Image (cartoon, rainbow, N blue to C red; front, side, top):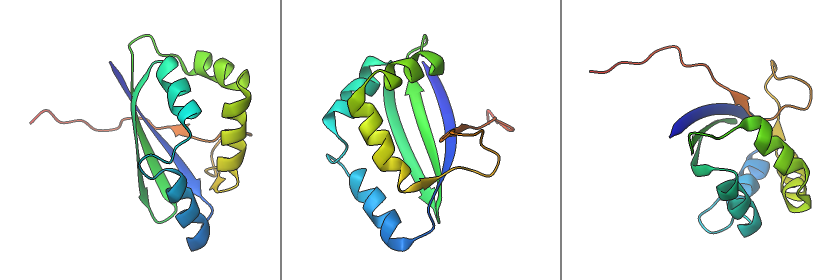
Length: 113
């Protein structure tokens, strides 16, 4: 199993953030999106928020590939519809590449106490 941490900002607007969270409330994510993620080798996703900054924790199969998932995402109209909708609530981090949403975070500390 692999674990990844990614970051993204939301548009800093209370109503917009509320709507975004409603789409991600238990049972509200589109079933086609959930099924697609599972088929791509994603085992679990958690999203945490403080202010308008979000952190996504994703656990995947060992052979998971962001590149392969991006290809499958691009070929799936329902995923594109979801991503377009989510993009109305999201804004890229200042250091994100053009068109990049979630930015992979680098681990800078780990302790095995």
